[in-house]
Image (cartoon, rainbow, N blue to C red; front, side, top):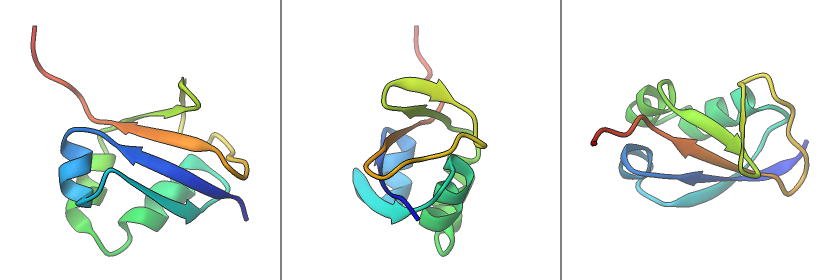
Length: 79
């Protein structure tokens, strides 16, 4: 199974308690499940996030590869 890095921003970073971590997952959905399994607040925040794979927006079903970098971007407010 691929080992990937997830980077957290804003509320996702606060919920995770760290800015990055690695996990093994073959899709974005599996990655979200792996990193939030025992962290309900992180699961809640990731449920409303957009995800980027190497800078490109992706869906939860997007497959991952070894060494991929996924960014978790919660909705931002402001003007």
